[in-house]
Length: 267
Image (cartoon, rainbow, N blue to C red; front, side, top):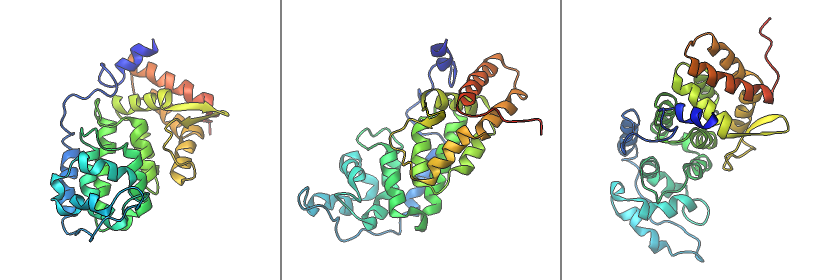
């Protein structure tokens, strides 16, 4: 039964299957806009690196080739290691637009998005002049996740990535709690069923990339376990008549009740 429900949740053919190789029309413009947003950012003189790992000359093409020509072949290893054994905020700032474009494409040579989003937080991206353009990409990705049957990123991956990059995910959780279409309900089912685990009476995200010291992790744990998500599910029962959705809501309700007290709706 659970396998059948998983297939029916999403596109009725698999929760994360993509209908085409092209980004969602809402996401594509925000990724393209990064070219203009970062157009005024010039390259640094060189990319610093650990002298025991590589020579700075090995990274010279990242600064001399036009950014739009760079692929995962050149940027994959850099995006994985930047701010650790290679690079600085200066070259990361210069290359972030192109890296985001490649991360949200089909270039398999790029690292997990959580890895790079954590580096954006470390670099302080929200202080950059391009913060609005980066935020627009994040918004488009979240909208894509909650409105399209075949979103580019899985819910546990994107939620963790945004939780690593942003100061707060409360507005995103609030939007999710609207449960205003089948897709938002199915995403919550997928996350609660497969993206979380029960531990010490709590429903906790499984994704190993989460930094449990960040306030965004606490926001998510509170949302899942202290009433907001459960209240959203209870309210959704009154808005839907489709037997399939009601069954999915019932399963989500069971998972959330296991992790926290039933909210008192009598007051």
